[in-house]
Picture (tube, rainbow, N blue to C red):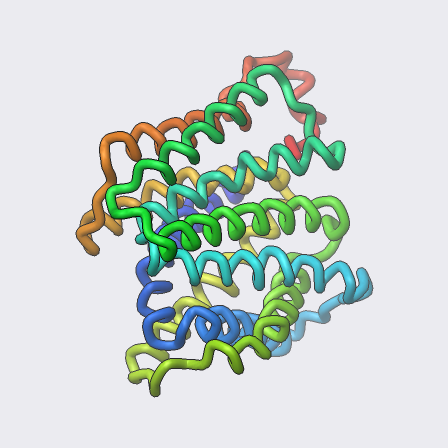
Length: 301
């Protein structure tokens, strides 16, 4: 990867890893639907204002249907699943299940003809799937309906993120990251807005809660997704999604150090299996090839 791509990768890992802690506070204050809706709309509006201030002319000629699909998956579905799951299963476990995104991405890429699965990749998929089963089946807390629904929501969130990223890489690769991100957040926020009638904001939030919401929307959503979609266009969806390994590490450290969360030994093995499976799938350290072939090699998508 280029130095710019590496810097973007590190920025996403740290920012999204810390976002689990901020997300918990926002969900507590605004509810899990309110957190998604307000976060998305504020992020989308922020990006439109940024474009206006910088006199950036946005091009949405790719069509509203494609932007709607990305908004429905990478924003609405992913954030709803994550916002619902995190308070119920904890930041550490939610973050580890997020590491399943590359596994889903590999499967979708294979079905769409964007990936070529190898024996090594198949082994990685099986290992990662086994890790998910171990992680969910042997938690450090009692298995209650709330916990089970939380795990299901987290996995749904991961699948939605993988689907949306591959869809954007397939149909909107030529679209600017600012256009793609702003449209996705606005469509995602508008889709979840009616759900506030069923799950309203629980009480009047405090001033500090609005600050957390602003940080989550403007920095951890708007800014990061612009960087994310730019990285997808540069190095491919699956390689970009592999940032979730580092996100998981940061989030688990935050959860255990600041929130007092814990994982069982069996769960730790499950987490290792998931990350090990993803490494097999992505093959981040491929065998060296002839130097002359490297510059023309397409991104692994």
